Length: 260
Image 1 (cartoon, rainbow, N blue to C red):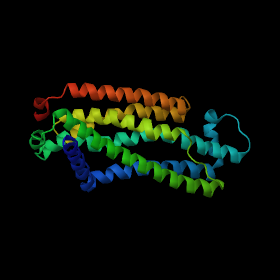
Image 2 (cartoon, one colour):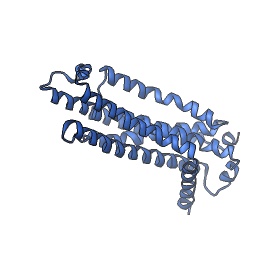
Image 3 (cartoon, rainbow, N blue to C red):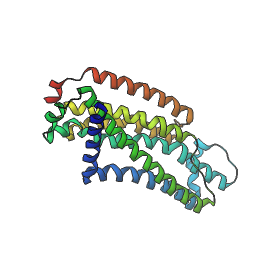
Image 4 (cartoon, rainbow, N blue to C red):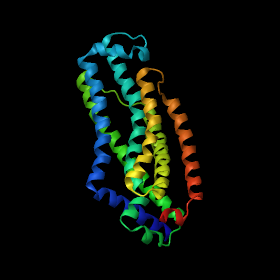
């Protein structure tokens, strides 16, 4: 019975975000722009301006003929740079949906009704996290599928053969992205319980993007090149941090704080 009520809250939150066209469009448009236009610009620039690949010399080292270099640059972009953007996507989706979790209930004056449900406060909190996590991962998976389709078409047209994503994407989609999503959602949902407006909760979540931006800068400057082992280590660290944050947040929950 409790699982049924838990699922009801999750479905309610998912319906609320998908029925809000403005918020839902933001959640979809920005990630799709990132995964379509950014790799497309790199791939097409590599094809039409082959001299530009020299900018990646510090990362690529010495290679053979120009065509090999072009494919190596595309592989570098697809398998080493783009995975970092799949840390930003769950953060962005989370900041939109999770920020309105409790504070959204306050604004719609439905929070008291929700708290009167048979579920404990921790279960309500968990349902809010699961709803945001499901939406975050759905958008991430859809973004990845769109990116693969678009980039493979462009790669075939420019190089004559496929250049499929490597195994590091399994780590990204199955471990890293969900872990980042859980960290962001736990922090944002917890902040949403204390915030007065959705905008306030979203502003608090903005700082979460800064470490990812530093990783992206490190990628493009050659100071830090992400590989499968680094992604695996980051995934494990983020998973442990996510569990710690969820448990610590549960211990600090109380009705008085949420109702303020």
